[in-house]
Amino acid sequence: MAAGREHFGSSTAATLAMAGSAIGLGNIWRFPYMVGEHGGAVFIVVYLLSALLLSLPIMLSEAVIGKATHAGTFGAMERLAPGSRWKWLGLLTVVTPMIILSYYSVVGGWSLRFFGEAMARGFDAGAESFFGRFIASAWGPLVCHTLFLALTAGIVLGGVKSGIERFNKISLPLLFALMLVLMGYSLSLPGSRAGVAYLLRPDFSKLSPSLVAAAMGQSFFSLSLGVGTILTYASYMKKEDSILRTGIGTAGFDLLFALIAGFVIMPAVFAAGIQPDAGPGLIFETLPFIFAKMGAGAAWLSRAVSILFFFSIVIAALTSSISMFEVGVAYLVEERKMSRTGAVLLLFVLTWSLGALCSLSFGPLSGTRILGERIFDLCDRMTSDYLMTFGSLLFVLFAGWKMDRARVRSELGGDGRLFGVLYFLIRYVAPLAIVAIFISNLIL
Ligand code: TRP
Image 1 (cartoon, rainbow, N blue to C red):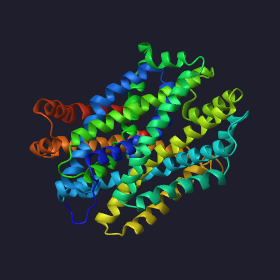
Image 2: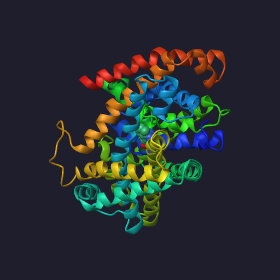
Image 3: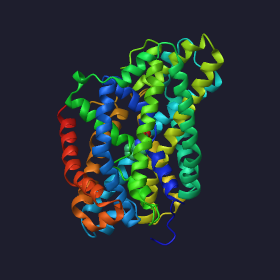
Image 4: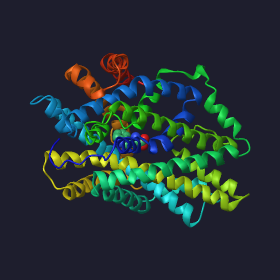
């Protein structure tokens, strides 16, 4: 291990950090609206399958590369395949999380704003138009984006152990407890049973290629795959810690959280008699409306729930945004020999600027289209449809075909049969499936 390189204190801490990266807006914001857009339980079934057969092998590939080298993406590739072009592909995966962070921080800012609103006033009649009015303005969202990014940078500045590790250790268990309370509340609402049925009874007639591609894409996003986040975090693991345990633990927690978020949101949506297919605005438009409606009965309860809900989202988003930030910091500190503070400042300026454009693209810049899309959507689509799938392909090919089998075997651990299955998934199934998603994203 490079002298002075930080690492996580234990295998549990590493799992918590990876789970913190995985669990985020992807679970609480994106997963529920994707389920709603794609017909409920059938999406969940495909999602579970792709998490197991596809995302887990990709995740383990990334982790193996990171842990074998104890370096960030760029350095890892250079160490395992010196002098080859792989390192430039490694660099690509340093850029991707910065683009994701730019727009992620905008949504993180919205969550902050909603948390503030829940604290200060609570939601009342007219709540459903609050979101639309808010994102169309220039300054509010910009200020919130700045705040969210500053919080992220502040935690990352603290370092791996005292910043990232400590924050995740406190916030994840808290988040888990909060979500359970919210689920209990949601399930207790009259009329929530229809929402439960919607999540549990698959209607296989809704199955389609675009549903499969969307489910796979969502599972990549949710597990932070293909951009070097998992690689970088795994590189902070100690030699004796098990990747297999950490990987399976992370994927398991992430799934659990997505499902819990589904059971928080859908029963409430159905109880309020709202359509589940509202799209990306689902939690920001529908939920305040639901809170406002419930507020008529027990104002304090709906107020408390709305505060808890948006607080949870902010925390979940932060544990993920710090992981994206850390990828860039690791690169600048280790490969460019910058100081941690300098790296954090530089990345702050870069991601803030792109994020500001994303934020303004709902307001003053809404007329500006690049390739026919608004800037925010362009960043989102470019990363989740292409760069992340491309990065994932790169990692499985690297672990499956470029790295020595014995090296992968020894890093991964576990018994021989399990390794055989995983290695087969890494070498053949995952690359083929990723190429298929890529093509379907291009033509669908
Ligand atoms: N997985 C996180 C979520 O579900 C988002 C995230 C963190 C991410 N790091 C990432 C997404 C890297 C893509 C790439 O919210």
